[in-house]
Image 1 (cartoon, one colour):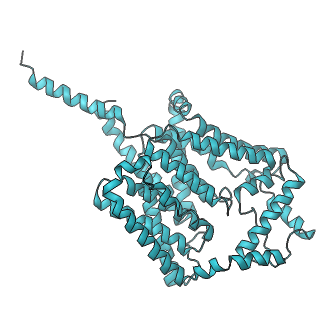
Image 2 (image 1 turned 180 degrees about the horizontal axis):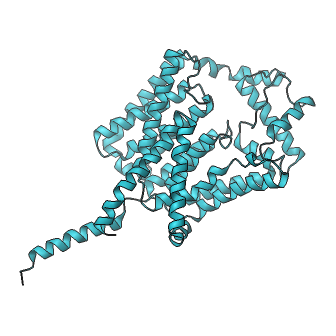
Image 3 (image 1 turned 30 degrees about the vertical axis):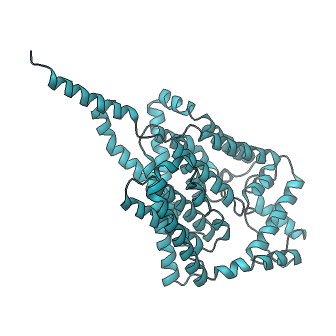
Length: 425
């Protein structure tokens, strides 16, 4: 690649990075904003594939596990829709099909890892801003901006994770402080949402910064005190928000909600309701163990159980089981659950060829999503599914700054120096 080509690529890289930032940061404010960035990136990938099919195929051959995982799950969804004769809207896992296209954009060098870090940091800051606005002006008991409180808490936690990754790689003190503040903001927004399941993912911030990690070499002395400060800030923010938003009362009610489920008085109590939904999912899976009841058929089937007295009469019926594995088991059966497990393993394997810092970020991020999936079906919300796919595809396909460009620039400089040393003819 010539210097001219590298210079011409710079504006495209800036525009693509802005789309990544929009897809991440916009998702914490409005699902449509995040969707615009996500699908524009996918369209860019499609354009690259159509313009150079052979080159695209070569890029995808370097990411076989990622492509296989995306096609496996989207194929499972489509097969259920077709097999049960369901309406087209039940084919809802379409963001998974965009993973190879997003990976193609990243593999072409049109975006760098900093876009993920900046997008996460901005998303975390915007999430905290939305939470404070809801809390101070609208007196919301669980501030979450324009999003569902569960989705808001999950996205705030994931954005905090990306901001933490930026802190680990920040080259100077100013950016370190910015990423530090953003990670704290994301954690505070997660706590403010009152989403207890999302708080389970916050320890992943520590897992990402574990001293023995491959990313620690850039983190050792310069950021060790920053990590201590971050821990203290998170503890302080958790205490302040928890006290003002009665979070500790919500945590203390867990035992009471479990007892309520055992007594058959579920209502809208979060833990009791989840236990009821999980029990219903297992009943449905027992009725149709192989292929399940069909995509997006959970709600009508649970309503049937409720009419038969096999689901609490006072419990709300949701469209999913608030647990990814149980939702898949109920709707797609044992075959679907096996596909989900295989896809998770393939996604993990797809990160093996990534640079150490991105491999760790991708795998910790994937683990965070699996933790979040224990108390919510993360595939049931397009907003969370898009962010999951975006982060995984970027971490799997991104590479360090193009070495060929560096070599080209170095060679050009060397040629110029040699030319100056040569005597004139």
